[in-house]
Image (cartoon, rainbow, N blue to C red; front, side):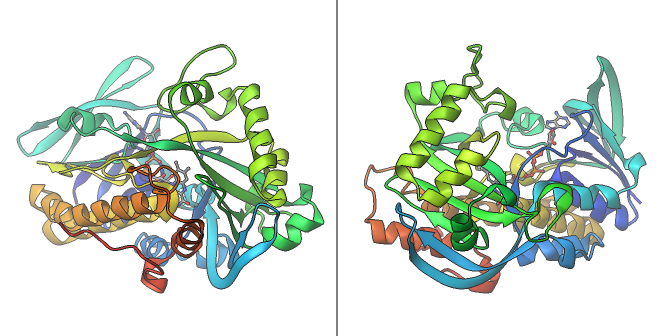
Length: 410
Ligand SMILES: Cc1cc2nc3c(=O)[nH]c(=O)nc-3n(C[C@H](O)[C@H](O)[C@H](O)COP(=O)(O)OP(=O)(O)OC[C@H]3O[C@@H](n4cnc5c(N)ncnc54)[C@H](O)[C@@H]3O)c2cc1C
């Protein structure tokens, strides 16, 4: 049995902690946020890989994971269906997954309000330095797994040159209660994975469980993600609250200025199908996130490994962030099971997950390329529509590539 510290108690950290705990290790998860984490995140597309990772963590929850859609629909700006086809998928949510993973881990393995500042390797162990309410604590471990997200302190400590790159666009997100929506939206959009792609814009949406994870008809909600180019003054404005405080890395949901909400709803009426415009109108508090890419060249230093968003961030178009973090967790837990909790096991993990991370980033860039094209050339509308509806958040293991994406293996 090894002592393993996991830094970050979100989905990636919880996946790996559950697997390692189940394998008999002494696991301590250190999470800097105090109190409930339930209000975080929104809809998550589930994939077979995610279900397999849950099984590896000892959890068979497929039947209660979320809402199943029968297929996809692309709406034009007038609200008419342009393309529709069958593609069954299950849509879950951040809070549902958090609830499942957190409940499976013994409470005395999970420490909140603990912020890690650095780690130091000393002989055969690693010292983890954290602060809680101004008090410093040192934790000792055989290996440390950093699942501390896109702004990872641990990545910053070892690889300061690896920084998130802004993709040139933001995503407006939100969740609207099913019961608030008109008959038109309920019958033509709500039950489907929906798309609308005006020039240089893309909105996607799908049904998720409503409050208390209720998946019954009438009690669900519709989750949307609207990608919009934003740069210069417009980007500055959208990331600034009503008191003039600027949040360059991302504005907290409750700080988004009312003027920005009014503007985005007005743009929705002008640019989107009436169904999506209605959803924007009736979502109480849309929020936004700048979209970033993050590519690491290395995932380990001695007895310390990076995983999840701390290691690679692919734009959300592939809908794989959580599945990718869960596959990192499987690779780490398997390597430790085979080789022990030592630097060799972490090197084996890195070798298998570096190519997967690069490939996810590459495919997500290609999918986002028409929202903000790196060469200024926007592909024709038909190609954009096809690319969006056939390739966004698909289960590659099940459906394979549906259109023109070619992996660059160089
Ligand atoms: C617009 C948008 C849509 C998305 N849609 C999807 C989707 O449909 N499907 C999908 O799979 N993914 C989606 N994602 C991505 C997904 O949210 C992430 O990939 C996933 O949450 C990664 O989890 P993680 O545990 O690696 O990191 P995070 O969830 O970022 O967790 C990091 C944790 O570490 C903690 N932490 C940070 N620093 C410290 C510290 N110093 N000490 C202690 N704790 C610390 C943080 O508080 C946090 O809890 C989307 C992302 C965006 C932006």
